[in-house]
Length: 335
Image 1 (spheres, rainbow, N blue to C red):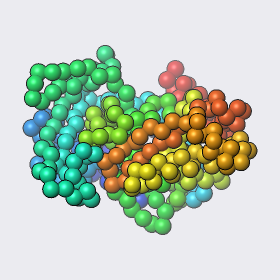
Image 2: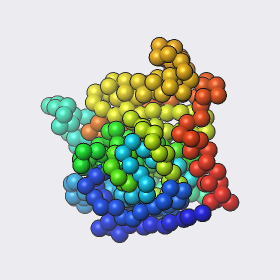
Image 3: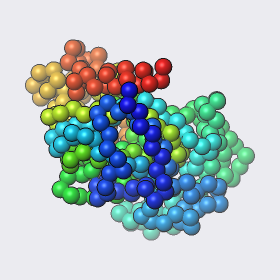
């Protein structure tokens, strides 16, 4: 078992997908033990640390990476299996911003009402109880919420020598902010450049679907991920697999186009796997599918289309059984 540990120095954090040299090379089959910073780079620590004062745009949403996967070429697919995602600190933060979020005017949704207040909430992270404790700012109300750690941002370098800000989700991955990307899940990313150049960041101790206010329970993470390469198999949009489901993502504006992209990918994928014609697959996904929301606040919005594997008969074995292989590798790592 090849295990590599990496904790980036602050100056090594990346704020784009593409346009950056690799931090290192890894072989397929490698297990990476990574530290990732929160979306504020650890600068927002108290309720008085307003991001507008302690952070500098565009240095938000840092990711750890990129990593060059040996042998990865355009037309291949990277499989990243998240073995564990664990909050690295006993606190996390969330915020509202004046012109960011789903329920306020933004620079693209110009409104005349006053902007929202910039406000910070600090959560207590208790790994022993597996909770994040919410504290209201204007009353003594508090409640313990179950932790469900995930990574909001994971992706590869885009094609055509493009560099994209880490806050933007698209076909390369990026800031999809789907709670489905938790431990036990494998994400499949189409390779656009030599080495793939994948990065991971934006850990959330907990996030509701949509990330409605624009931020989740933002937490630094200690994350363990297993890396695999599927040669000669292309992936048009990021896809996810857990033990029971296959999932497709779509990122765009408006939200209905993100929904259409994810549903289109799941329908055509189902057709390819089962041999059903397109309309038969369309009917199956229409009745048996689910549609969890990723984010409705970023520069692009993200939707997920999700289908139980049980409804695919014997056709649910995808990407050369990468999920099962990496899950077994993860079990070996933790045993």
